Image (cartoon, rainbow, N blue to C red; front, side, top):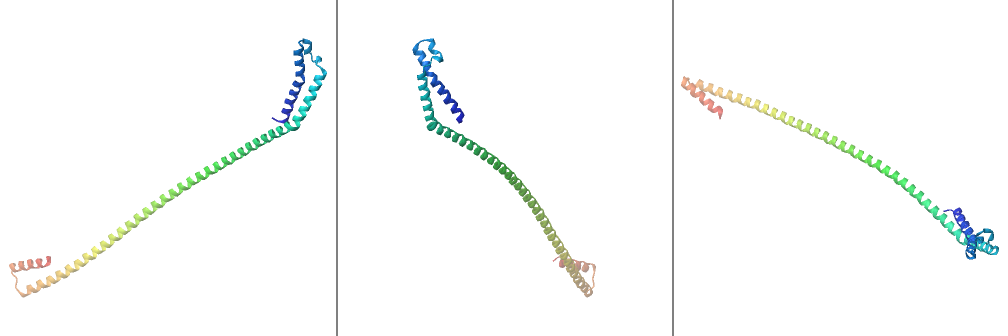
Length: 196
C-alpha cells in the first residue's frame, strides 16, 4: 500500500466519524426526522470534526508518516530482494550453462584422448608385431645361414673324409691284389669307418 491508500482510508474513517454521532442521536431520539442529515446538531458535529482533525493531525505526524515510510522501505526491500534473486538466478543459469559447456568440452577432450590412446596402442601393437616378425625373420635367416654353412662344412668334411678314405682304399688296393671277396671286405670296412 502506498500513502494514497492510507489517505483514502483516513478520509473514509473521518467521514464515518463525523456522521456517526448523527446516526447515534437519531437512534436515541427515536424519530425519523432525526435521520435527516439537516437535523444534525451543529455543536456536536463541530466538536466531532475538530476532534477528528486533531486526531488526524496527531496520527499524520506521529503514526502515518513512520508507518508509510516503513511500508515504503519494506516494499523497496522486497523489490531489491526480488531484483537480487532474479540477478542471482540469471547468474546461476549462466554459470550452469558455462559448466555444461565445460563438461561437454571435457567429455569431448576425454573421448579424443581415449581415441588417441587407442590409436597409439594400436600403432604400438602393430610396431611391436612388425619388430617381432623382423626378429623372427632375422633369427630364421641366421639359422638358415648357419644351417647352410654347416651343410657346406659337412660337405667339405665329407669330401675330405671321402678323399682320405679313397686315398686309403687306393693305397690298400695298391698294396694287395684284390679279389672279389677282398674287394667286398674293403668296401665294408670303409663304410664302417665312414659311419663312425
